[in-house]
Image (cartoon, rainbow, N blue to C red; front, side, top):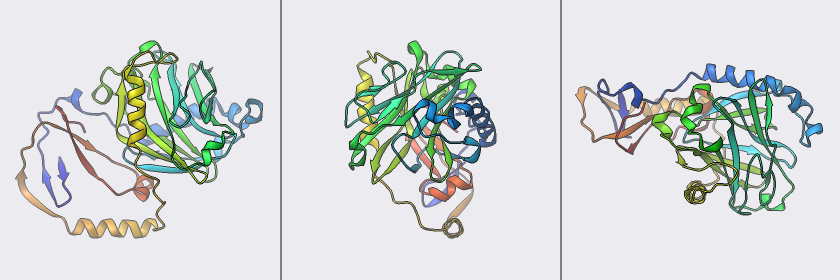
Length: 314
């Protein structure tokens, strides 16, 4: 494996790393096919949104984009539109989608659908053994205020560990209805990533000037907890921590993809690779982020990052 520390590239031997300690990263093509299949199941709901009190849209007219961990995605938001949704197989049980509103202080879920929150929950919609949960933006005026932050989070029904959903690859989606893009939020739920946690927070966002700026965390917050009661005391602590982890509202780059690729080429040319050199490192997690061209167009900040831990991740 090659690692880059910002100055030079060195090689690291990972032959002795156990397979179960490696994070499984599926191909994006398989992910796109899975999401498209699940969207088709609920297409009749999306195109007839007026019957469900949200602005209708046709998912066939949208393109899919994978948002990697560590990236920020910006989407315009409009009252009455679906902003987030999850699509998940009903195995082993409900993959529950929840929303925390830091400003208003409310958590909504399949049972408590409204309240102190800028979103309204759809409740359970199940067809062909597939679950749909979505959040519709309501008419709460606080949306326009800078600093209004939210954190969507996932819980396993009746404290089911998130790792048990991993095999069926649930999808966490964020909608850009202006550009007609469905963003797939990366949220690994294999055992190496989430352990035995029953609650996971993939990121946090902030509203500003009619847009939602959403950070996808490099390392999601995880803990024990489940909807709708959230009896575990660490749940509120983790949600507040996630809100604090939001970076800032970054302006979208005006550079063209060609300019950005040229910039990367120049930077790589300046890196000196030491041949036949190995480096010894303390036990740690190595997170390798690999994105497609679309992902590269929006964020080149980090190709590799290191986090302290007791295992290696790929």
